[in-house]
View (tube, rainbow, N blue to C red):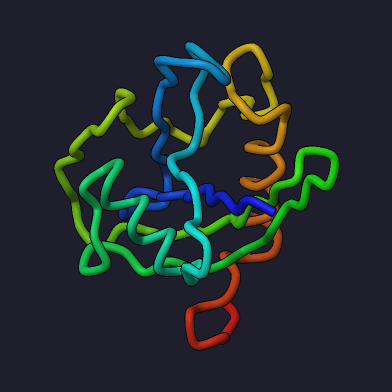
Length: 143
């Protein structure tokens, strides 16, 4: 099964979430979380940090990621690991392919499938973080 990751990056205040605006299919023109492929044999955390830095310029020194949840799509032969982090400082984003920006959480409908990729999964993931926390660290401790 091919592995992918989705990375939820909150700004320092926790009031905004980082999105890319897709410039190609799938989800052309929609807001999506950053992420990418997990290479065969690659550790999930290593892949998440690698993809995050490639797509945004954000490195380990600026954010600590937590593994929150996974989705397995047997009918598509893939799985998606979801990581969450909050920036330790203000940063300057470096775009790889898609325009990047932070969107305020307050008053936004992240279940809107006309605006957001993922068939409502982005809204679900945001609610999970709100209700249950950010997940586990690389060492396995929960928050």
